[in-house]
Image 1 (tube, rainbow, N blue to C red):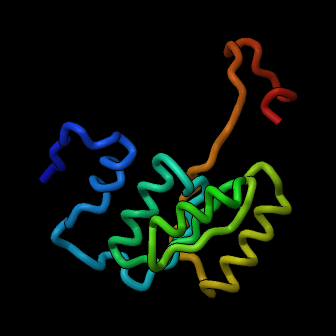
Image 2 (cartoon, one colour):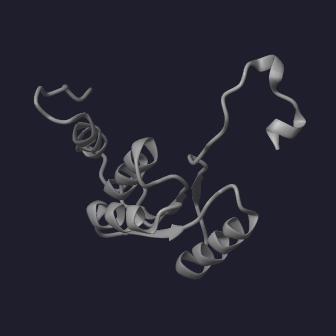
Amino acid sequence: AGTRLMAGIPARRHAMEAVTANTGRPGRLAGRKAVITGGTSGLGRAMAARFLAEGAAVIITGRDESGIETAVRELGAGASGVVADVRRLADLDRLAAEAGRRFGRVDVLVANAGGGVFAPLAAIDEALYE
């Protein structure tokens, strides 16, 4: 069953409501531990909301502490956050250590965060890739 679009609901709010709608199968992720990079907005945040609705505990990451605080507060119980920039290996090491400390294990890792530069395909070389 799909979720009907409702006029007048801001797109961002609607996206959150759509992914947290009752699926008829509550708790499919009960007891699971998830880490979602880039979880403060967009698809990452929507996935975090759905995982929480299904019973998982979730750590979201982002580069901005205030953004993480806002997202965690709005996501509610079971959500926590870690400031981490996935482009920095030291941040990823710290994230792994923190997830281990909080959860003991990670059942699901969603590598959602991303970035990049725009360039014509022919202009992309190893230096630009790195």
